Length: 336
Image (cartoon, rainbow, N blue to C red; front, side, top):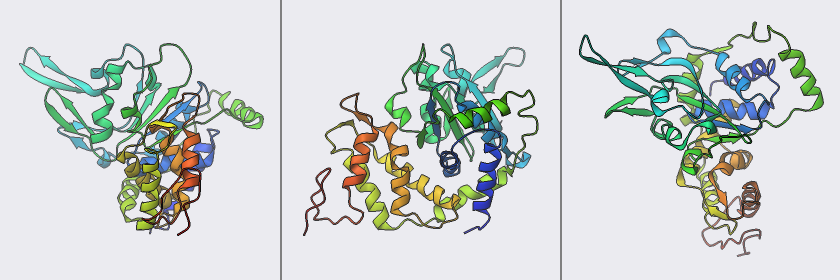
């Protein structure tokens, strides 16, 4: 295990927190998801710093020219931003073919998804048709334009922001939410944090001296190391049982798909890597389970938040399950 990973991650977190008031652990989750090859959605009230956080993370990474890959003749950018509006169309995001009359050629105009780091700001302002343009690119890391497949190069990361209240908002469908590795809420700052925000962001030059602290080579190297983190079969069994319990819980209408277990396991490995560990523990699964699962399920009663049945599941599934256990939610497994 590279002993320099943990100090580098701490350096990255501290760099962002110099400018943005954000919980260090939530920021660590976001960075771990990026390294894991997943995507993040920040859902919160407007004005709490979702976009500034994404921008700060993007600007903390410098992209070497040799790491800006070319896919099917199309160059990937280091960073791009999609400012979502209700009139945005799929071709505004993915790209489109343009006919050049004097030469008789078709030229492909790439969309902003052709970048290694994509900020999708206020994603729920997009209409369902345009939201659908993200399905293939988020799951398969590719784009199909008029029958031609463009495979996007690693690393590929989408961080989306979503306002919880407002007009002209379109709810994201569950299959799209399921493609996000983790969903986080920043919440309102404390009084002291809010004073700090005013002192920092009340200045015209707030971003002037903000610089990158890692380069793209670090990100690429770390991503390749995620698979080296060990996850014991007992830990895998625990995660699988937690995921399967969402299909048995009486308060859950739409349970988790197998994709959820895959995403949570990879996030756990990446988070362990960020902390300088070479293994995933059950405690680590418990730590991220609700953050990684709540946006994937729908409760039967809308007044019941997803976190409630998920907490019940964590309290019910034993750490060392046995095949003969007959689990009952909220109760200890029967003594054998």
